Length: 475
Image: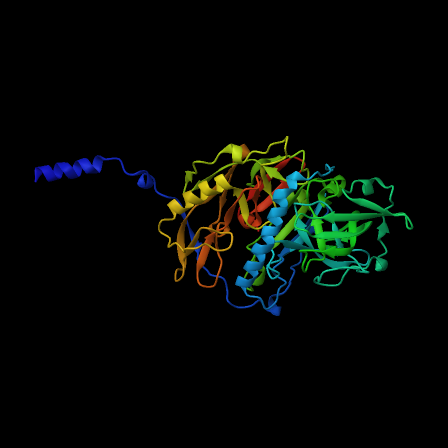
């Protein structure tokens, strides 16, 4: 008997296995599967009154998927992932291409989800011209040129709303071929008969827009007007621009919208993107917004800031210095800085913060380390074999309402840590309760932090101070 007591006491003194030496930090996920019901006309666009003042413009955003009627959530997710793969491939290839460098009160606008078109992008509602024609423009931090489809259309895709006709606008003015702003275009031409500048933008996914380069007035929330904005008036457009009227380029290049308005409003803007399904849920009270000017930084109380990185070979993109991850409260081992570091000589590597890519792509060794750490910490979740699309780590949460899942945090330079809500990394992919880890690996060198991981944060692009901030629960 004494021997048995001694043996039990000795066993209790043995060190525990590493897997049990520290409790895994968890948080609660509401395990709501995708809805089997199609999106109806009643769930279409409904913009709330935006806020504006002399130094700030603030307006709502809509996800692209908000505009597809009679499509189920599963259908939309399949379209979203296909489109997202094309965009990510374009961004991953971008550092191999040459680009031109960038140049320097406020206002804001509502954003709408593009979910109903099977896209991971968000739309801003903008008035173009005088009188203003309403245009839904893709919010894009990964490109510079502001453009929209224009009549007469030689080759245009189907968009939501009326195509802008410059002949009906009193504020439309063609840009001369010799104008300095015409020479800032990567691909400029000249209509010598009219002495007017021509533009063309080709995107890495094969999409193209071409037409006249002009100056026009854009109207935002509560009548806030920005005059003499250089825009592309596209008469020939094709590619993956379904439903949107055009694109509001928010990159760091000299022709981007923030660069054009910098003299009047400063270089800063911010956006807050709600869950891509919020705009199609009647019960949702949150909305996506974008803010330009003084209010963009003023709304950043409590933000975790990290310095903006710069790629001299790709001036458009917003780079951040991602240092690593924590899963379940423990720092993930096996994440090498060499896999995340930007090579300024070749322009390869690094980490881009992008509004238009949905799924975060990480250099494959980094992704595998994070994924394996999540799998090890999520031992209480029932694995769903086979994966889904580009996701290789999925779980069967059918029949469960609230599930405890391991926490996930990103660590950035400057001491910034971004603790992700559970719905930002474990998302439903079907109507039967399958949830997948919403990140993927890439062999393209460049890593991308996508908008699924940004949802619910106000992301502040403080161009004046050259930093990026994240404010949680700020929509």
